[in-house]
Amino acid sequence: MGSTYARRRSELFKILAHRGIEQVIVGKPLNIYYFTGIMINPYERFVALLLDSKNNSCSMILPSLEKEIASVKGIPEILHRDDEDPILKLLEVLDGCNTLGVEMDYFDMKLGEKFIEYLPKMKLIDASKLIGNLRIYKDQEEIEKIHTAARYGDQVLGEVRDLIQIGRSEKDIQFALFRAMSAKPGVVTDSFVIQVLGGERTANPHGFSGDYVFQKGDAVALDYGVYYDRYWSDYCRTFFIGKPDPRMETIYKIVLEAQTAAIEKVHPGIPIKEIDLTARQIIEKAGYGEYFIHRTGHGIGLDIHEYPKIHRQNEDILEEGMVFTIEPGIYIPQLGGVRIEDDVVVTKNGAKVLNSYSKEFKDMILG
Image (cartoon, rainbow, N blue to C red; front, top):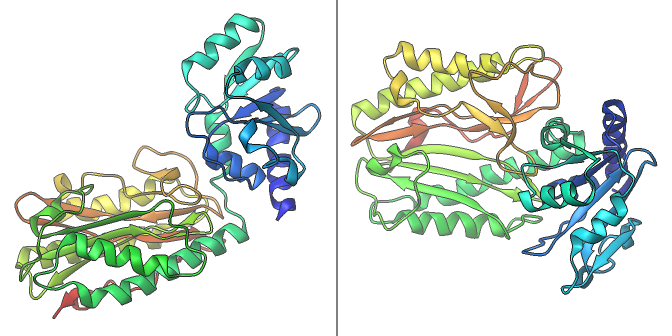
């Protein structure tokens, strides 16, 4: 495993050297994990990974209570006590650095102010996207982890499906999903994303599960992520308790057509925006464009939402190894909503869908 993280650091060193960035400071815990295999929750204390492209070396600035968390992996530690200012120790290490990359979407302004005060000649460059872009391309090991998470998603859906009944609540099913995924080997439960909505509440794409009790004819949307070995899957299926309102059947079939077409569109070399536009055009042609109120998808990996973002303004080109969701939806207030979501990996010849649970309308009818 160590070679995986060393290889990732080596890739970053090459990019930094090419851009003339001597050192970079990484703060996001998941990015530190990506480059080191060290998972740490800093809470309010200062933690940073410092990578030096001149020497192809790295070190970690850590609270003293985390002593040896990095050194056991061969990474030198710079420790600070709770009564010490960790930034002053960082500044000592950076003295003489001319160009520093910083995760500016993570660190607060106080850090920048101290750089300017103590090292006014040092040039600061935002390295946030540079680091984020490295994570876009998944290697085979990462893809296998996401695929395992997706397979677990299939399994827990099968285990919970029969519990979706009249008289059960959103929170009942939310807990059942959590319990089912928690029982799977390798699933991490320190973070979870589970959304269960019923009836008219399905018209809110980002609603919170509550006490709503399911009734006959309700749509029930289950959107959840399985977190396996620090990699996410993301999944959504919309069920119906008995025969739904005919309008819900109509919009379900439109969303399914849009999602199917968008998946078929995936090929290396096309602009990412084409995936969104393909789904959006089908929904707009059917007269429901105003009710498709979010992007078609997002990247998944160490974060459940990461690059690339699948929207109609994204001119970036699809490349092999990208992994993202495709999840069009239609949401009509006072009626309900439908979203269908799968995880997709870009292959040499197109796309591989990592989920396998049925999406056919007839299979979504419960009871």
